[in-house]
Image (cartoon, rainbow, N blue to C red):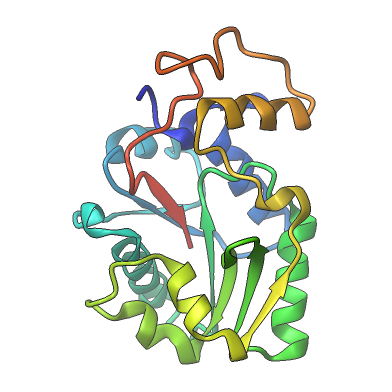
Length: 208
């Protein structure tokens, strides 16, 4: 339905711009943005960004392939990488403050994974220690980060995300998040398949 979620309007830019801004504000290195079904549109949006773009030709096989693609891209420039932060491109309320909480707990408590708590279990945003890189790169893993987080519960620290954990899987949720953020209502958003808040295809983008 409609345009990719990452490219929906948000505070003078796009949802993806807002998330990348939080990463920059937190003082983190330029991220890798993994694209899938909408590579061309996302690449155009990022033409002036410091983020690196990596297309995942196998995006339809599942989120695991996008994480693997992003990790391999990150290791190309940082072979000594000690941790991998995984973000989704449909959580525009992720903030500098929450990212720094994740990083602080990762550095001070030395868990294998610092992840976000949801009612159904742990998920992203999450930081994975290097000891989990092989599991993340496993070709047989089609699931996203959540399945690995839940299988490694004894080595995982879960943080309460507050608003940072809210996503926009539907037009209605997009409209709700805009309201929470104090952004003006977009006519038609949240009112059906033709609304600007319509979701894109799976595998649109993940940020590493």
